[in-house]
Structures are given as structure tokens and as C-alpha cells.
Figure 1 (spheres, one colour):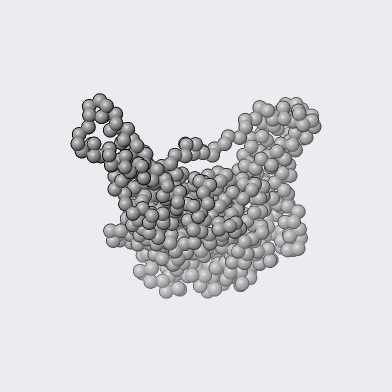
Figure 2 (cartoon, rainbow, N blue to C red):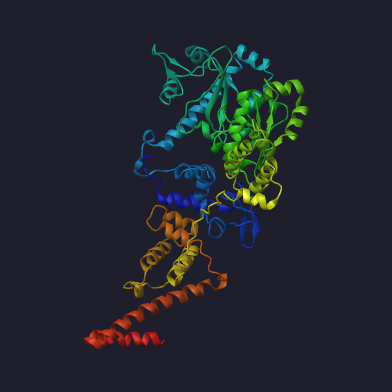
Length: 578
């Protein structure tokens, strides 16, 4: 991206953001003393170890050691990059991001994105207006059983077969046409005529979580191939990271108990119309790990519903394998496999909503679906097949982060293979590697200087207690330069909290040191933090004096001291006696 975001704006953004509110909209927090706690969303946390501090505007997990400010949380939880997290916070507060050096909008990705949001919204509204003026499109939707309220709820539209006709009918200006072409929303053919890639198709706008139109899906109403197409990827639209219908679900259920994942746009719409209003789709593409993460950020239970053909069954198995690493004690999946040659749209029309809800209620659990599929083609009377089964099943089971679920599935596997004795079960699993612990702990000894800097990072207002730093200017104590640097920043920014301080040093050489020190637990009661901080300062100064004293005494024995050095050692002795 051209141009930098000014530090003052980032600091202002963080000062406007309450990290407790930000996190609480995504994960339910519980008050615990002056802080807030919950199970960590970044590892399989059995007891609440994820702590959020309002005072410090900072979060920290005692289990996996992940930590940071509001920007870090969005980066880690929403899988955003730094700029995207700033955009998210700016959108929350209704602010536009300023850029240094007066960057022109056409040179800047952020402003390009804002322009693209505006243009996709404009063309979406034109498609919506056009469907009401096009009898063939309306007839198609009526034929598919979609009513007017659903057309409006999902903002369904239509693009004419001829772009010029579409322009004239909806009074599209040349200026808008040029902008749409420049941003590749419309294209140009071999005859150098502009055309819409979605021409002759029903348009299904795709919205982000804020309700902004970011792209489109299109379904032909004639026998054009392919039947469905999606927008080409842009810097606001990535197929592998978008869920169709999620925005509409969240309008009805801010925190849905379930999310039912189907394959098509019309499946989503028809089920929603039948009061099954927690349905989404992955834009007709295969499920990605990003899709799974988005789904689990919005619900604890995901139910996958696939068509009853071979392709649907294969897609369900692929989805299971992609989802396994994200299953936990609290996050689970289920599966509905429809009868052959049926999809959600067709089956609900045949059976009705009541019977379809029974299918949802009786959805296969993950374990039942797992073993139903993995046992296909296996002859359990054959030792070779049993070995093949274990070789195939264990790597998949080991992908799951939850030890409890792993043990449960391995016990089922052992029983299927015919191992009923617990000792034999352990022996059977012995060759499997133990799960590696990827958590890196900061094992260095907690020195007085490390404690001093840590207290300052965690409590930037302690800088007001330091009235002079002259005594440290010549100090050779390891860590003094970092301490003085942090002290200067805190003094110049008296209202900084821990989150803002770490943000100030995000791209500096010392950021990793500061992040580590920001999480140290000193076991000091709050009322004594100031006294401990001042005592550490005095002790470090005293240590400097003692080192200088030792040097001068040693020199006096060998070479003698100058008059100035004699005065200096007299002064040091006097200070140390105080």
C-alpha cells in the first residue's frame, strides 16, 4: 500500500476502542476481579486462561502465551493483516484512514477499496431494479419458488443479455460505465464492445459482515455454460474467504446456535424462506480452512448438508478432513447426506420444512460420519485391512486438537479393530508420536532490570515517578538503554496504556522483548507496584555505584587515584551510606 498510516491516528483509534467490548462481541467474557476471562479461542482451552484487561487494553492467555492489543486480536482472531485490522477499527468508529504525504486515491489500495465498495453497491442496486423490470427473470424466480420478500431480503437482481440495452433501460451514465470498466466490473469483448460477465444471469450479491456488497454470484436462466459463475477476485473479494448468506443470518440471529452449510445460493434462499434461517453457502466452491474458521467464529455447531450424488458425498468427506483441526471440546460438526439426486431445494419442496428440520435434528455426528466413511471397503476379518484402517484413520484423528476427542475416537477405532483390553489399546497406540508442544516459553531468569522494564510496560503511568534520569546516563547495566527509551516514550505520552505502548513499538527492534515483558506475572499486589518500582530503581542505581566503587578501589591499589577520582569515591561512599 502506498503511504503510511500516521502513528497519531493509530493511537487515537486505540484510545477510542474498548478492547473488552471488541472481544466480547466475538467471545463471551466473564468479569473476574478487575479483569475479564474466558476459554482461549486460540488453543483447546479446558479452563478459562484467556484474560482481558480493560485498564491495560491488553489480552493475554496463560495457556498458549498469545497476547496483544485490539489490533493484534483482530489480526489473530479474524485472520486479518495489519492494514485490514486498522480498516476494521476505523469502520467501527466511522473514521476514514488518513495517509501521510498526501497520497492520491488512485495510488492507494485503501481508497481503491472504498471506491470498489461504492461501485459494487451501485451496480447491485441497478441489478435489483432491473429484475423488477424483467419478466423472464421474475418468472424464473417464481418457477423456483422464491417469493418477493426473499428477493428483497437477499437483494437478488438480474443482468440483461445486452449491456447497451441494460444501460439505456436503467439510465447508466457514461461516467459510471467508465468507472465500472476501469475497476473490471464490466469487460470488453473481441469486437471492442463493453459487456457484463453476468449478462443473462440472476444476480446474487455477496455481502461482507458489515453488509457491504463485495462481489456477485450469477445463475443463468437459459442453457448457458457454466450454470453458475462468481465475480473474479478483487482486493475486496476472495472466494475462499467468503460465506454467502452469513450477513443475512446474523441479521436474524446475532449469535446463531447452528449454521447449516449448503452448496448453492438458491438452497440458502429456499431454506430461509421456509423458516430455516441459519443457512449459509461457500459460494459453490470447496470448503477452505478460512471458511471453517469463519463458521466457528460465529457458532459452536456447524451442520454440513450436501447433495445426495457422488460429488456431494465426496465433498462431505473432503470437508470433514479440512475441518478436523478446528474441532474442539466446544466446537463440533454434523453431517446431513441427502437422498441420491436430491438437493436442499428439491427435498424441502417434496418433504416440507417440518421433515427437513427432522433431518437437521437427526444429523450424523462427526464420529459416526467419520467411521461410516473410513470403513468403506474395509474387511474387518482381514488383519491387513485392519492395519490399513489404522494407518488411514490415526493421522486424521491426530489432527484434532482436543485430547478428549482424540481418545474417544481412538477407543472406537480400537474396538472396531477388535482390541478390547486397555493395556493392548495403549500398546496399539504406542508407536504414535506424542503431540509436540509448540508453545514457546520465555525461560530467562527474571532479573531486576527485566522486572523494572516489565512493570513500566504494564503500567506506563509509573513514568511520572521518575523525576530525573541523570544517574542512569553513564550506567552500563544491561537493559538500561531500553528502559530509558520506554521511559521517554511514556513521559511524552502520559495517557498511554499497555496496548498503545506496544503499538508504538510494533515495527521496532525491541517489540518482541516488550511483548514478552508485557506478560510477566510479578505476583505483586497492585497497592505495592509503585513502591517496588521505586525500590528497583534505587537498587539498580546502587548497583551502578557499587561497581564504580569496586573499580576505583582496585585502581587505587595498583596505580593510585587522581584528585577528581578521590572526590568521586568519597561521594560514592557517602551515597551508599544513605
